[in-house]
Image (cartoon, rainbow, N blue to C red; front, top):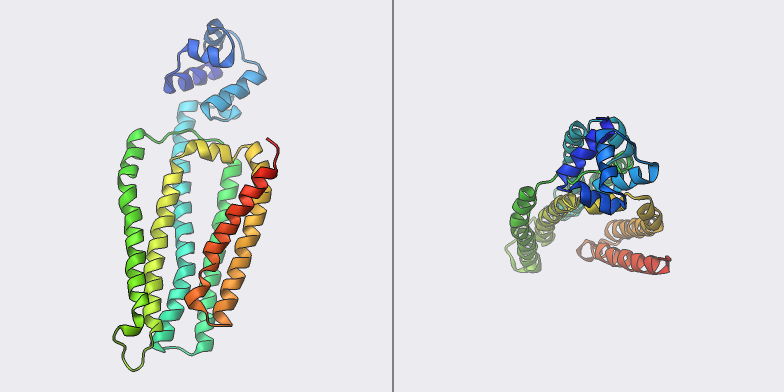
Length: 297
């Protein structure tokens, strides 16, 4: 039996597909599948590509590698990458919001000169943005090297995560509501002589930081289990379609960040300038809908 035949048999059995079912999907005879698996004949390029799409594997793996060993290696590598990626993205997003929380807390406590505080804020925000940029580049490079992966997540793993998903989202919503309660009543809460109600708004932003961290990490973890979506997103067709969308959304969110920083640092509108990010998200959604409608099917 050839390496191709062994891999074909491995993938077919792993997906619980009979030779007859596979033959029907490829529009060949059952005897042809049997010959491929036994090494008596070889599939033509068109059928090899169909097999790669069907089993979500690379052509090199199908023809030249031991599929069972390669799958274990890919499994571990993908899990490690996704775990590392969501941790750092969550940290970067949280750090941006924490920068605003830190600014309000220190302003309320009056522990630092304004010029020094602005500098510290910019340092924290810059570090956060750099983290997001670096991790985005690393993920893009990983996806180029691994455009297709196997769905090696077990149903038990998915069910376990789904059972905890609602409680995690509810925890994030609860943190925001508690933070809003503190922030809205900051002017009526007790304040020492050396403090201002900016302190309580900073407390609100800390709660928001925790909530957004939960939403980001949990959402990315849930998306990790959707292997089919990962493979679709990395297909040549999807990349060609989403390229202008990514450019527009990137420009929109960059502009939102510029407005956020100017409104906060120049006009001291920290209480309301965060609204630019939800608005930016809405504009990204509108841009996506418009660009998708303009593309021919």
